[in-house]
Length: 180
Image (cartoon, rainbow, N blue to C red; front, side):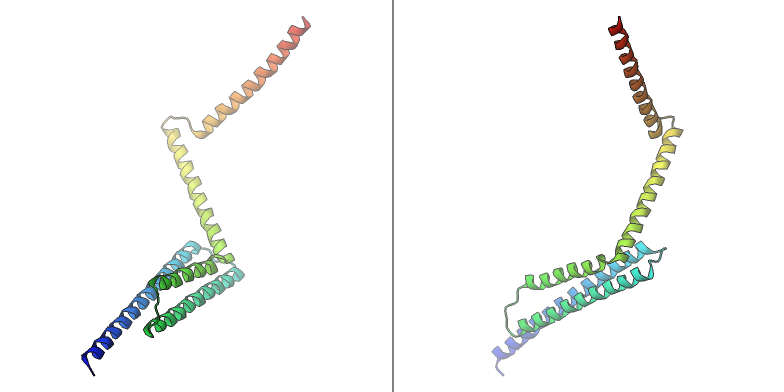
């Protein structure tokens, strides 16, 4: 073989190796992202098990998301093969395959009632924490001798009642003046 042929083969091998490394890195990063998502989802539902039906639907959603990832891997393999055969494959096409797959996979998981139930539990827990924080804040303000929200609301209610009574007295005075 000539040096030109050897150089072309080496360049070809190097390009294919770089593309394989890039695909492997992309798959690894996407699997890590998927694992992190599932861990955070599991943490959100920790402590309370969803109903059997919700749990089954959640697993179905996860399976559909997995199928989306596998389809993306197949598309990546096809496009890598196309590039190896000399077809011009834009790097943005490869990026778009993974981005679209990530969106579809997350939709599959997030569209389940198990995910909705987990989010509901998370929001409920956050609201409980906010209520506790508000109670602590009000107790602290009261201990400092400052008016609390309840105190201000009571003063406001009393002012409204005084205004109502004043208006009633003014109406009675107006009637008395008219009579005179």
